[in-house]
Length: 94
Image (cartoon, rainbow, N blue to C red):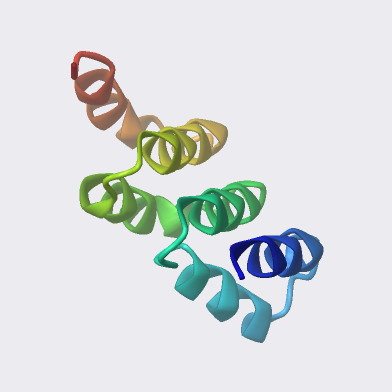
């Protein structure tokens, strides 16, 4: 059930170990957009520049506007100016 998976992801968000990181990355491709959003939010809270390619990939691959928006928010939280062209391009999409 998606709500159980979403709750687990929300609970794991503060855990910084490597196994949790892998779970969050897998959850970012869950069949439920709500679970994907929770996973992207948890990963974005880490503000890890190494995740920028992952967030770009998730934005391009996801069909949920909410998940796409969360991927963009996650990218925006990371202090790395290299994302600006991608974010500018995303801002002009309709």
